[in-house]
Length: 189
Image (cartoon, rainbow, N blue to C red):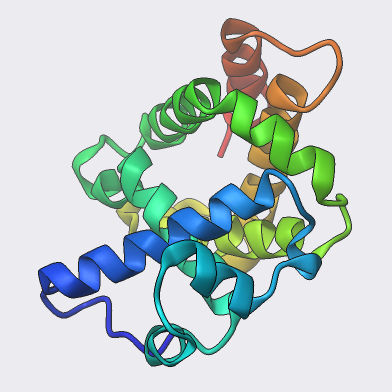
């Protein structure tokens, strides 16, 4: 990403980032990611192409920013304030609640984007990277037998699977069942 998210944002930068990410999320409800163009996003966001390229390398870079923005909405970044033994459950509950609140949008996006497409792969990478960061920062990670990346992949795959069972399947799993499955599948880690 060309824009440095670690620096204090101006109101213009905040408006610009919001306009482009909102435009992408809106377009994803009606189109596959691979069919969305920078020109179309710029028209919808009402910004010129030059502004888009001042912030992002391409649409995939913007998609990564969208995941970061959603993670902020879920409040993933405060994981250090949560007791290590409760982190997995609390963060899963937050993800579940966010997805429950936005399930109509999620269904529309899933309808237009294949499971093997770039959108899903990008989300998988983001989840894995986020979980790896949490594991690396956790003092309890010393107990893990094996590389932290392997543990992060296991966590990410399990969480992705549970969220899919809750929000994508025709016969969705309810929140309590998902939490029970989470405790069973990741409880020993």
